[in-house]
Amino acid sequence: MTDHSPDWQDALEPEPPSAATVFGDRLPIVRQFTEHLARHGEELGLIGPLELPRLWSRHVVNSGLVAPLLRAGRVGDVGSGAGLPGLVLAIARPDVHLTLIEPMERRVAWLNRQVDELGLENVDVVRARAEEAKLAGRLDQVTARAVSALRTLIPITAPLLVPGGELLLMKGSGVTGEMGAAEKAIRRFKLQDVEVLVLGEGVVDDVTRVFRARVPAA
Ligand SMILES: C[S@@+](CC[C@H](N)C(=O)[O-])C[C@H]1O[C@@H](n2cnc3c(N)ncnc32)[C@H](O)[C@@H]1O
Figure 1 (cartoon, protein in one colour):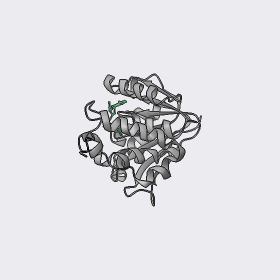
Figure 2 (tube, protein in one colour; figure 1 turned 90 degrees about the vertical axis):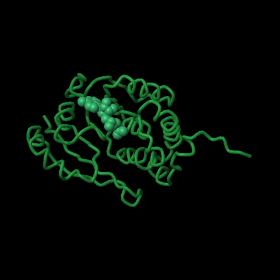
Figure 3 (cartoon, rainbow, N blue to C red; figure 1 turned 135 degrees about the horizontal axis):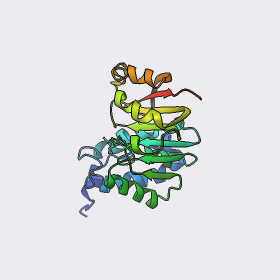
Figure 4 (spheres, rainbow, N blue to C red; figure 1 turned 30 degrees about the vertical axis):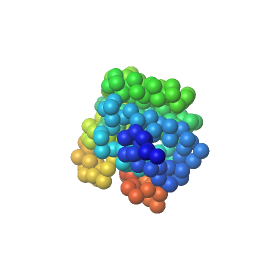
């Protein structure tokens, strides 16, 4: 019999074993989200045409690696786009409230639709640029992925934090160079305990780097 599976299904990377390790009993909802993204992501301009063969490992599992770093409280994800890492983290950590901050109307509509379809009760979506989101001093932790270099990302994310709050900024292998270029911003916001965490060793082929730092406590 001829297989009439749609193109997206043929192109989608098979679920890697790391997905079960990272998401545990939340995996069925992560699967739903990944399928929605694979089905609609390209036509909605959320992911590029080359991303389906690496959607699980490069995007979904990669985002989920940050979940153990979240503390209970209110976490903001700046520039959520398709929901990476914000929606994935909201699925993985139902005990944490996620605020997804995204200025583009089409992406905000997508995020709201996913929140409804996946039945997530720990998410709100704010349509705004981070610097205009009226969230200054309100968030316990802020995540971001693929939004901008640290030198411009720190000045739009650090002001959102409560005193003692924490930045968790997902970065590529160039993070050390970015930190050098961001020295002025690191000093200006008096960031403390600045470090780069390497996540996923022994679990995934491509490790994830996270720039972690705290703003001073009051
Ligand atoms: C390259 S996409 C990355 C999306 C997603 N974080 C990911 O990893 O796939 C960058 C996203 O950041 C958003 N963005 C750009 N500048 C922003 C700002 N100042 N505040 C909030 N979001 C911003 C864009 O609209 C876009 O959705």
